[in-house]
Every structure is written in structure tokens, then in C-alpha cells.
Image (cartoon, rainbow, N blue to C red):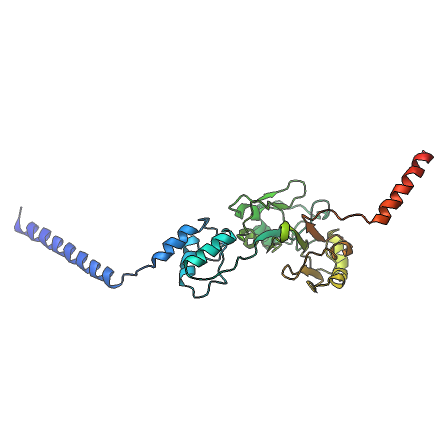
Length: 295
């Protein structure tokens, strides 16, 4: 082996050792010591990495929780209330249990309620359809029915109903991560409070057209008649752009607005059936024997 080859090998080894030493000292100089509590908080989270908290995964949320002086605005929708309280206590904060939320579909434009005016023959994707034209019905605001929201759900909490053509939200599986809300190009899905005993009242319509136009496009559209607003004793209903909206933070679930809606645009979920007034029952009881005698 020639002396030049030996010198070359020695030189390369020396350069390798020198580079390793430089990298070592640079790493020590700029080393970032991570708070061990980040790992602890991440371990207390459900690990869904759904992004519902507004951060890129559970670790990003854990880091934000550890670094924040005030955690009142931070919440993991997948974790239950007790879990968030436990995390807050672990970090030395006090946290009140947040009201659980659930995704709600604010469109009742089923195949029966909303007639189709044309046929779309293209890529079955809501975002693509919304960018091309207003939709295949007279309502330019309603559900497009291609299930992009269903595809975005990581918890199998949504499916498309083949009869109605609308997505269905499974209340037992929905964790209110908000993925479907972000996925819908028509903004017809909203996160609302679950309500006491899982009861909710909301306007299932987002059509901002004037009453006659909206009613022609969909038989159950809100027509902005203001009847619901007038009977609400809690000022929970507002009318804007020909559309009623019920503020779930103000609504006391009294149900007075429901029978006032002439188009049945206000939906009530998980309520017991209303009791029939006693005079009506008595009148029905009295009329029945007469009918039987007549027969």
C-alpha cells in the first residue's frame, strides 16, 4: 500500500472524528430540553390525533397545555370532562367541566323535501361539486349528498342514508372533533351542546333566500317569518338574512318555538311526546261511542 493511500485514510479518519466532535458540541450548545410533563399529558390524552383541539395531534395539544398560563380556552373534544379536569389538576390548574358537544346536521333537504332540478354526472366529491355549480336542486345552500363529511370522520360516527340522501350522525359515537364541520363546503354541520338528557332544539336549515324562494326549493325550509322569535321567552332566537338561528347557550329547551314554525324547520331531538290536553281526550272519548252506534 503506497504512502499516499495511508495518508488519505488517516486524513479521512481525522476529518470524520473532527466532524463528529463539532456535531457533538453544536448539539450540546443548541440542545432543547423538553418539559417532561408534555409526555405525561400526552399519555393522559385519548391519542385520537383528530385535530379537533385545533392542534396537529395530541402531542401538539399536550405541549400547548403545558406551556399555557391559562388553559380555559384549551379543550380536547374526544376526552371526557373528567379527563380534562384530571389533566388540569396534573398541571396545577383548575378547570371546570366543559359542556359536551355533538355534531348537528342543519339541513333537512331530503329527496322528498327537496326536488332535484338536474343530474350531476361527475366526481362524487362535495368540494368539487361546490366549486363547479350550486347543486342539483333549487336550494343553493343545502347538502350536496356526496358524503365528504362521512369520509372525514375517524370515529365511524356518520353514514349516508340512501333513502334521504343526507348524512346521519351517530350520537353514541360522535366525539365532536369537528372534522365533518371543516370538511363540508356548504357549512351545514355545526357543533352544538348535547343538552340535558341529550335533548336539542335547532333550526335545520341554512337557506338564506327569501321565504317564497326558499319554500319553493325545499318544503321544510326556514322562511324567516319570525314567529319562533316572537314566542321565545329567552331571546335565544335571532333572524338574520331571512334565516332563524337558535343560540344553544341561551335556549332553555322550552319547545315553545317548535309548534310555531309553519314549515317544520325547527327540530327537537330526544324529547318525550307532548301530553294531549285533557279536554281533547274527553271530547274524543265522548265522540267514540256515537261513532260506534252509527256504525
